[in-house]
Image (cartoon, rainbow, N blue to C red):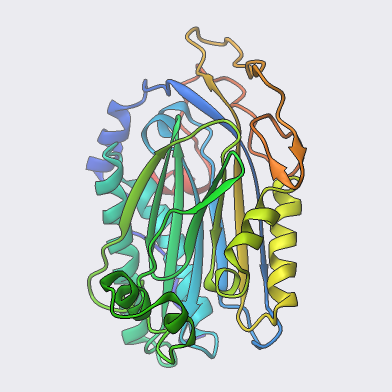
Length: 342
């Protein structure tokens, strides 16, 4: 179709290949066994789903050590499928750009990838009929060794459940949230405000985009939630805490989405749950298998809450690369395209 564009990113450069070649022997110090699950839902009112989620889990030790693993949610804006396009473009171009940058400066690399994805969304909105005004919120979690980095633009949120206690780890980029932080509006007034959906930072909203970025030490038993406002705007905080801590990541995602629909499902709903089941040292010797250490205390689910212990149920990317000591770079898929390989 005339109004479709191929999603590409200008990453095949000699400088890029040289940068990754210099890091070919890099190895992580730690590896986090992560269980994860994601679900997106139309909701009860909307006619199309403009939410998207995506993830990329590299299997090369140098890439894991330098860039880690990416998990992300985007909430599109624009209607008539334009928001859906913006969300997909934002996620795809961000991931390509992020892994196309060989720098291990996490904040600088994330910022550059956000800017490149934003420029792409802005260009498509400007040049393709029917895409004018489209945009998307974005929240990204990057797990590198025993650290997790959260970057975001807009009002898609990140939460951390640790030892049964829930905290919101992001601050909404919205007009009402800024008023609440400035002390000119209460939380109750913000919830009732006709301007509660006005976003002050987003992908595609302006020629320049700058994410907020925060980082945490990743601890065994931690459970993170990335979600669109179709979830956080419908389900009360205490209920998110209860549901997020119950069962496997898959059970938690389905429970959160179902609860948002029970409260009316006025928007698209997306939940992405990540759980750190264990964190182990990367093998020192080539070919040595890395295994999870036996925890001092069992991890169990009781009274609806997750307590520090491995949970082996749910979707997982908890298997280490077959040869953690190997140095061969991936030849296919995303990384293959980054290096110009077929």
